[in-house]
Image (cartoon, rainbow over all chains, first blue to last red; front, side, top):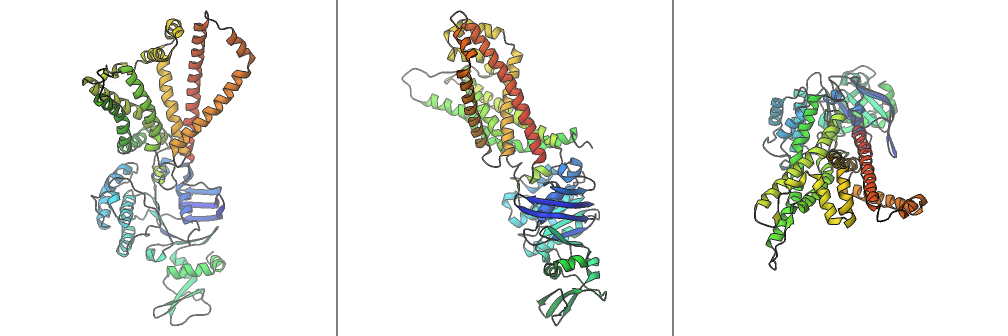
Length: 274
Length: 286
């Protein structure tokens, strides 16, 4: 489990987190959402040990990430947003780093490369941006770490690749694996993530599963805009209204509408979800 | 598993860094190896007035030595260029090995593997060229590891008559081969540790910035030293006592002091900068 307690973090001139506390439970695929610049990548870096909290603590299964101990590192993998590759083939790359990870599976890598439709024989620099991203995703997943952190994984992927991405994540991540997907393109991770964490500047606005969300928030699709809705958006054929679920009705979460509703009613929804 | 040092994991990081060694460094090594070849070809092909230009083995040893120092200076910035980069260094930081293992692997490749690979290649090329009937006389290989021959050669080239006649035999008789080897190895370690540290603290133009800092430090040191010597009465009195009878003794004493200063400087600087490099690997933020 990842436990963040009373975390303060700032870069030279800008405060990123102020006294935030948060937990990520094992075996879930978390969606880490937030506007640009709220600190999604920074949070992932803090969890990975690439940054150190100025105050408070971050622990991952009892390890302090910033110590960068090998027993911790062999159970986490961070795939950054920016594609940085070596002058080699994905196959050679994964063989080089795979030896460090106890559950690394080369057969799984080959299978994922096939599923993601990436040419095995080409070097990274001969692949397109999207192909590189998919190759790195195959590398990351074949290491079979307990924690997988993906920073904006769908950026630069075409529509079929985004579908393939969702497919391999849901199909090949074991029940023991915790995946945190940081993104601002919420549509790309629809039907994949649960729970959702929504970050704001200095703050965490929401950390809830879909069941917890629909227990308190109702997503109504109808012909008209409702007055008491947190957020309303026009869709083809009508409106989606995000409302308080006072009558405990069942509905399906629309992540984009939820995100917008949270952004428009920060304190109200934060208090509602407590 | 031990989180500080594990021999199996250390083997893995050595293999990881080893796999990067030749792909990253071979071009630079090839350029350094080719410099003596270019000198050879240039000399061999140049029209002469009948007198043949000869490069003796010891002068080539000095060229190889100078190029070795360049190889040591550039090695960290080439082999571990991205390890402190906020984007490109993430892979290195997240590699499941301890700081000590990563540090020791870095030291092995910069301090041991680079000199061995460079010297082996340079001496092999020199031997091949020496076999051909060109301007190369003798084998650099036969002299490279004999530090005393190099010192004698250096004295012959640059020393004064007094030193050659009186001081040199006494000087050489008073130094042990082991001491000279230790001094030489520590010199490599110090040079490498300076540039390994520079590689960790600077993000761009790492080698250039470190050379700049060394030049500035040298100038500051020289200003302080000259001021000290110029204003020290005891030292001035001591210099006044030097005459033709005791100049050899003075030179030997001076060289001994310089040797000891060099030894302690090498030990202190290497230790501090290696510790600094270790700390930077451990605490680097990305």
